[in-house]
Length: 319
Image: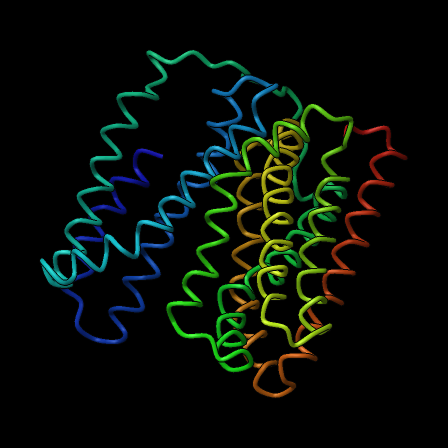
């Protein structure tokens, strides 16, 4: 985690000096390669330094921090660009990564921090041989493809089909962050106190997310956009924290970094195919058919999660 943050900071500063298309492509690839080393290690650290009963809420708290960053980042970036130029943006990005490195060394130093849930597995199981985990990864890849449409094809739908302005689109997308900020922590606490399984909750989250696309084809009323956004956000708030918790729980069977790396890779695959596929479908098939296809992918995702639930029950494994 330390080396990822520190090297990312240095690479960010260096990015401003690249001036050809090829060098920029290589620079972005290197930055993301090093920056994404942080995530699997961060999940393992969360698993170790968080109490067992707090893991899902710990993931939720990290998601809250990420959403706050996503909300404030564009505004802060705009201010930096207008006051300091684009070069200033790279300097600030790099320096904040380096400062985050120093903070991490201070607060999470193994010499001064007590592990609360350290697991030593003498006979670790390879994630590549874990059938249940592969079913889970396939379902999360599909869920990621569906979810990402809200940040690529959906804004185009708002503009072209419902003639919303950029301000109105921004406010509608901002509802996602607002709902998460206000509701996610108490919602996760309430669900954790229930008798629900993680696989069952992920299934429910997938149902809500798929339904958010289906309802858009039921009426031309502009208010349905808010209904769809609300369904997607609730689905996201349930599916992501409990999928994170499921992956961390499963990772105790083997090499935790390997498990968590595969989990993050599933969403990287969704990014590679989700945006492009959605935009291609909208261009060739139109919005209505695209939403039906996304609903269909949601049904496949639900089927996989249901199969996961049944399979783990048959194997007497914790769900």
